[in-house]
Length: 415
Image 1 (tube, rainbow, N blue to C red):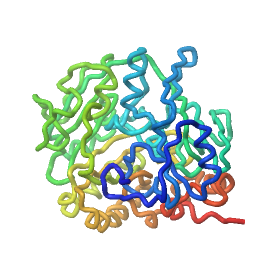
Image 2: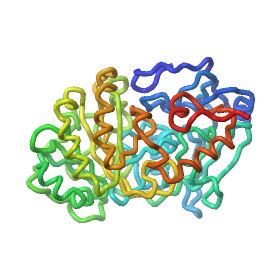
Image 3: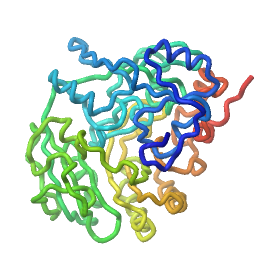
């Protein structure tokens, strides 16, 4: 099996597809090494294992809405697109979506995946309950009242296999989307927070060359004021793709046409599968107030980055309380790099890019390409040592570990 991009062939000795949580628990209890796979939209070995891979798509896929509590209970392997369709049919929504609706709910939450918006926290912020199968095979349900809840929601697969999630929902809402072109870099850097706050969700698309940012995507709630024009940027008069030479056919509708949240918040439509096998990705998250200086530092590397880039997307995310979340107690800006499928060249330039971002407190996205030995995780995450101790206690033999997690957390101490 390979991951989404095809740049990684998994090393597992076997693949199991349990049809019940009880079967899954038995598989976990007797395994020596085991990991779950979702939509495989990761670009590093975070979900790899030399042991057993679990595919969870055969588990019951019920979507159970609790209108009184304002929550929905789902199997973790469901995609956001499928969840969104089911919620919308019942008049409900979640607070935000990532750029792709195809990714699995559990995988996205475990790795800290997000959408955009200065007041919108990551997808994990919707979680009010999580079901985990521990290394022992025990099934536990954690809520905000439990001591381990904030450690477990964004835990990179180190604390157990996610079998179910309970998410907060809200009434369905509509969103309008507009694309602006050729925003000046001077205007963007001088007014970054104002521009990023000008709509419910804002994304900038650039390769860091030239004097302008080619595209800014604004997604506004239909109840918000009219979308603004920004610092001389020109509103697009036709639908656009983030890559200027690509057809906008598979992109969500633009030109200020209001539509349901699930058909506007992602950049791409659920019925299409964009970029499968044609790209690599990295992403780095840093404090929002560092955005102008960090972006200026990246622009100094534009000549090295641009030949390897399809595009880079810049987004913002509100703070949360999850111990290993890249947004832990930090309102953040995300610098996302969509690379051409040139892995040796990308891996060669990554350390220089990471070094340029180090002074700004950059944290890597757990599911994308980064260089683990470039980071002092204990300094970046105030609860990191607490998390490491919890992982050791819950998985003393390293059943859920792999090379990447060992490089981040250290090798488990087997007594």
